[in-house]
Structure formats: structure tokens, C-alpha cells
Image (cartoon, rainbow, N blue to C red; front, side):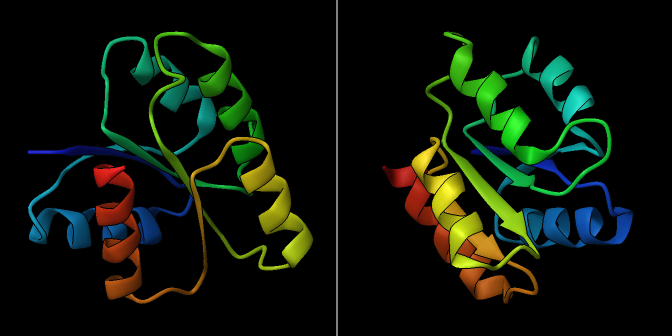
Length: 121
């Protein structure tokens, strides 16, 4: 079973994403902010990270820099989930090492399609 770390500060969205993933056969690890997520990555190795961009304490771009800067985690694919849908934000995320970018609101089928694609590559 593939494990996905979901980093999302809005509890309802975090729960919904994990429910969608679990119903589809994935294991889900939850973090409500980037700091907690990085602490989890010290002991757990998910197959994929889904990360909100706009979060308090540490935004998604900083999470990305930390994950990519750590030899133990740099190989893990990261997909942003964000309400920031401007082309400039999407380009920034992808050009700085994200493997995908899904804009909110999104459909479950789009989320699952992206997760499946990133877990194969």
C-alpha cells in the first residue's frame, strides 16, 4: 500500500483528502502544518507528499525547499494543493521542484489521477 503525507492547515480539507485517498486504497499520514510535516519525515518515508501552499508558520514553498534540500527526502514527489491558481504561482512551484500542482477546489477524480501519475513516475 502506498503512503501519502497530506499537509493541510484546514481540518475539513485534510479530512476530505485523506478520506478520498483511503477509500481509493492509499494510506494517509496527516500534518496540519509544515513544521509538523518535516518532523514526521524524520521518521516516516511516504511515497508522495500533497502539500497546501498557504499555511501559517511555514508555507508550502518552504516545505518544498526543506524536502528537496534533505538527501533522505529529496526523492519524494511533491504535489501542491492550493487556492493560488495564478499561472505565476503554478510556474513558481513547478520550476522550484514540485512534481505537480492542483488548484482548489478540485474534483476527487483529478486528485486521484494526479496521485496515481506521480506514484508511477
